[in-house]
Length: 199
Image 1 (cartoon, rainbow, N blue to C red):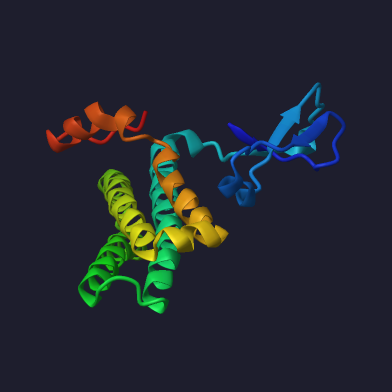
Image 2: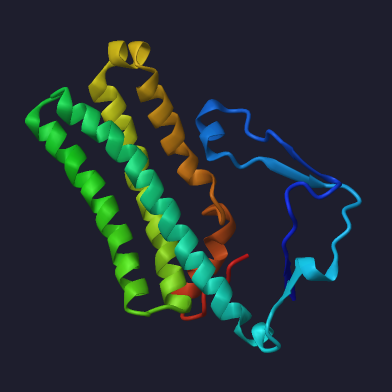
């Protein structure tokens, strides 16, 4: 097991635009193609001999961090829409308050995972909690974004590309792996007392 690190100008490496939808272009996650690339020994970072024994632990830590970052990032995107509603005083005070409560709930869920990480409460239960947090956050954000866009109104949507951008970008939270559909059986097994297995 090892990590291959190559300079970007290595012969045979090329970078290509990957995203076609406008909200995702900012991610700059381009496609990197390797064609007949030669990797010398000095380009390989070898893992310690006992790395395989810790692979599950490393995978779970990666899942925890990834899910938390995804949930936090998209909560920030939806928060920008809520901020527009508040600054423009759209809807009634009660409707605005409900939006604030929704976005605060999403942020609190993410904060709970962050606190577990800070307390070194990692492992399979925390990995499960991070995934369930992300699924809950995406439900909250879908509702929040829909209500915020509706409250901002059709004229604001038509005249402000920012609203369309934020609304579109926030929807991408549902595309990050693992998808809810792919994890259904694993989630049921987890609640039956088994470890959560990430497919």
